[in-house]
Image (cartoon, rainbow, N blue to C red; front, side, top):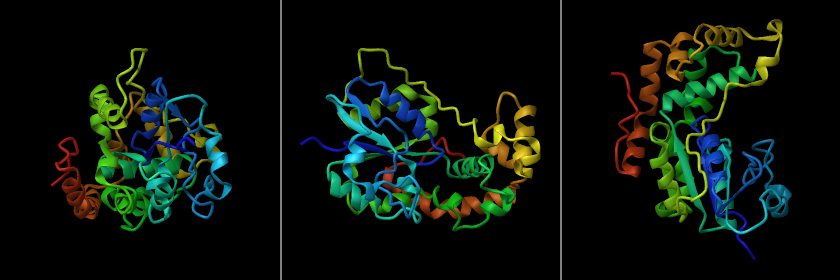
Length: 276
């Protein structure tokens, strides 16, 4: 009987997992899940897409037939404390499962997460208030070492590949080579585009009439029009009123987790710049 799944991109949300999913889907020796975010290892009580209760047959049907290693990507797997028991359920299915974890500058990820929720109409609080709560999802989902703890209880370090999103964007070929080596795959002879960037700008809010938009959605629309070449998440956060004082408070909230993360990966992340 074949393995149900061989590797999983476990997150993080707003860190490039969709791009990585699309890149790996091109490889002739992978059989990627036909949908992104299947959320099989979550429970329905945790996430609407949770499908653990539906059983493995439903999950199995999401993978294309044929030889090759099976992979999927679901950022809901690193959303503790909302998602619990993920690693335990993964281990029960495949104790040799390989896990890939993409991590973005924690403050940039938090801001991008907030912007996503605003665009979807699920956040109406201003950015300073929303990100000021240390136990908010915006902050907790950027505490990467915290999110890894449950997986380290079940899987050895050798089965977990931490990646830095900004390094992936700077040199995609080098980082994809790391991923392929981790998965035991060679660079393919067939065309293989590593510069696939997911377009995250299309959201539910864009099709709404102006009268239906929240103040935050209107601000984002105006920023998009005034900066047609785009802005970084940090620049947008500042434009929306996230002051330097608020940013420093958030940096402090990440400090302890970052030190533990750097110790875990064996280095500091030079591309993550912090204010002092």
